Length: 233
Image 1 (cartoon, rainbow, N blue to C red):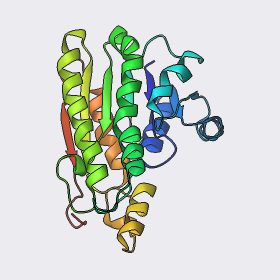
Image 2 (spheres, rainbow, N blue to C red):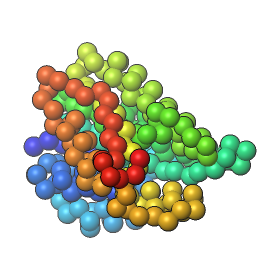
Image 3 (cartoon, rainbow, N blue to C red):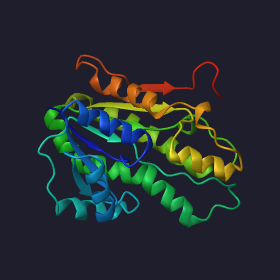
């Protein structure tokens, strides 16, 4: 039985990944930002265990995890959680910059650091769900894109550092996906939201799990997923 720690399991891609891993009998640990969210996740995913730690406050993650039971080994750490707020550079406040970078970059870096011993023990896999914005930035996407460009750098450095330890690192770059986050983006853009125009979260989850389940003699460093023919680009 494989052991996984997943962030962002409350909705969208993370929820699909969590359901799939549970359905196949894997041992699932879910990161929750607070005790209330942990109860919600426990109800939504019977059999999964929860760990409370807020990615928005990276400096307290070590303190939080020290007070809780964690698995002795991890076969994967799946970074799916994220946050997005759009706006021109001239309007984005330091508070928004700090929150975006904490949740999307510094928090994942710190969580990875804290569980690297368990990942090394099992020669496990780290998967970062990035974004097309991690490859190219557009107007009003500066904070989010900067965090995702940073996440790409984090993954590339981690891959080079942990290769000899047998830890694989994959970055998945989904295009626009039909999730609650995408609905929020459309609201911020002032556009109507039609989920049928975008990638289904199940499709991105399939790509993620393909990289995760690849035999140990191979790795997928980067995986880009874009809307198929007939859908928006």
